[in-house]
Each structure stands twice: as C-alpha cells, then as structure tokens.
Length: 196
Image (cartoon, rainbow, N blue to C red; front, side, top):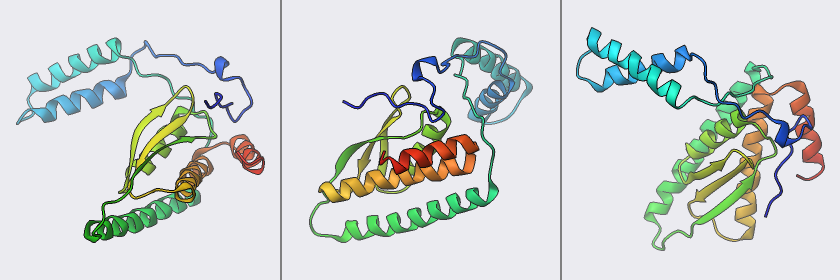
C-alpha cells in the first residue's frame, strides 16, 4: 500500500483544504444553463430561464470543490506540452492501427501511478492528457492519494509497465512546468532527484 503523498509545498496533506463552495457560482450556473438549452431543439426564453434555475439548484445542491492554484501560465512550456501531446497522440494512433492487423490479441495491463504532486488541478490535467491518447484509459483518479489507475493497451512485462509509469510522470512534470509556481517546480525537481 502506498503512503499518502506529501504536497509539493511540504505541508501536511491533512491540512490541505478540501472545501466545497457553498456560494454563488455564476460560471457553473451559466454552463449548466447552456447545456440545458442545447438539449432542446431550439433556444427559447423558457429554456434559458429554466436552465438558469436548474443551474442554480444543481450548484447549490452539489457545490464544486475549490481548486487551489498558485502558479502562473508559461506559454513556451504550454506550447511544448501541446507538441508532446500531439506526438503522443500520433504515435499511439499508429500503434493502435498496427494492433488491429496483428494476428494475436494484445496483452493489456492495469497499472497504478503514484503522482508526485498533491493538487486536484495537476491530477485532472495529467489524467486528461493521458486518457485522451489512444490505447490508455483512466479508470480512476483518487484525489486523496493522488493515484491514477490506467488500463493500457498492449503493455505487458515489467519493463513496459515501468516505461508507462515513467511516461505518466513525465506528463505530470510537463503540466507542473506549464502551470506551477517556482516553488512547486523546485520541489518536483527535488523529488525527481530523490528517485520518487
């Protein structure tokens, strides 16, 4: 069993706030209202008003947790992240096509990857980038422990599994380098040097 990871800033995970916002959330309400309006075949004042009311009800009944973000966006790193993602997408697509023509069935694996960060924001973005690539599916992402469970197509053997884990951690590092604060990047580099 993996111990609960420490946040990059050195604080105890137990002291991290896991608050749910009980306040007015206009963006979430507008998003729900837009989705509600699009479910109908035409946009009417009745659909818009009922969508806003449903959005208000949903956000009050099921408030979204607050996500702490103390970093800054680095555009050059974002460009590198997008380029790496597009490369991963192209390579994985070719691999999946080749698997379709292979006579023997692929050997699949389910793996757990312990992320080095303890941030809902980084967990979500890393999981999305991994899950959008063909051949990998995020089965579960656990907030409390920062563990991502993946189903991987045609990955078997200890070496291939460790390469897949390392690849997910590389994606997490790229995400932190795009959005993280200087302290988070330094802490990640320190963890990497320690072999974690």
